[in-house]
Length: 149
Image 1: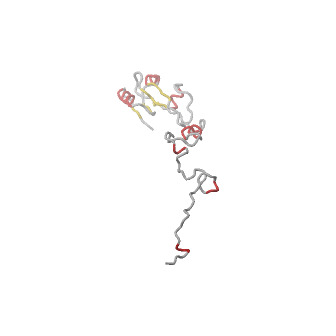
Image 2: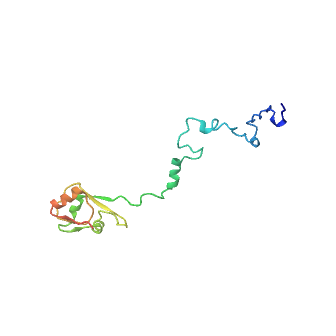
Image 3: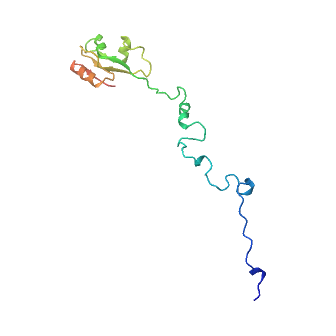
């Protein structure tokens, strides 16, 4: 039986790949070991961790800016019901009249006034300002009326 060179069994197995021998070896850096040796392999990295840079939650005050996005609507000036007794019976009460009688300081654009229940109203008045629900009942009970603009 004749045997040819091409039919001889293979005697040399391929060499094992040498890992961890530099970036040029095709198996350098992590050496094909996956993510077993770096930060993602650790158990307790918080969700919000961003690799050392400032957390997003810490950046919010800077994004908001100093006084940049504050509420532009000032709170209303509170006027108590018993203060309105200085008006004459049947008189109309609005922002201009409150400034005139010096109950409210100078009416600047955007000034809001709200009348709240504190004391008794003894006169019939026509109110052209925002009022609380309880004040509305007291004004109607005294014989006046509330006209919202």
